Amino acid sequence: MLGSFVKFALIFTFITLLSSCGSQRPQGGLLYDPREVAELSDKLGIQLSNLDKEDDKNMPLYAEVSQWLGVPYRYAGLSRKGLDCSGFAFLMYQKVYRKKIPRSTSDLSKMKMHNVSKSGLQAGDLVFFATSGKKNKISHVGIYLKDGCFIHASTSQGVIVSHLDEGYYDRTWKKGGRLK
Image (cartoon, rainbow, N blue to C red):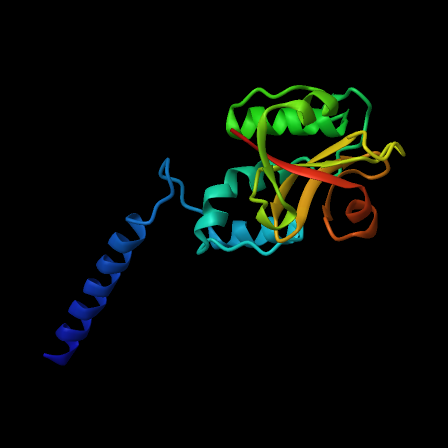
């Protein structure tokens, strides 16, 4: 008698778990494997969790940009053989958000968008810097990930993840922007 009760309880628990997991599927029916999320987290150097709704919503961004890590910098490049910062942003917005944005950093920075402070940034926002030596001329763009980290095509290291508080990026920060 007790044995059949235990079997019934186990089957009931299993069915309940299956049905509750199904109700929390992200849009599009994707389920994110905790191991894959952990690998992405390690690869990008940011803390990701498949239990965090924001992370879940931004998983396509994290997955796509992670595939470009280490691609070398190449001025005006637009492929895995090499690309520049605006080319990287251009490609990621097309692939992840299906949005066409300007190809140059200058044109991107002049685009109508919501200005976002450093503390208000969300995954996918654009981050702009004046790195050319001209204090007010925006010359570099990246894509914000989370927790102060952004991904961009660095002239010296190719596509990398950096932190907004790093001295160089803190000094050259100009603005954050969210497309309308």
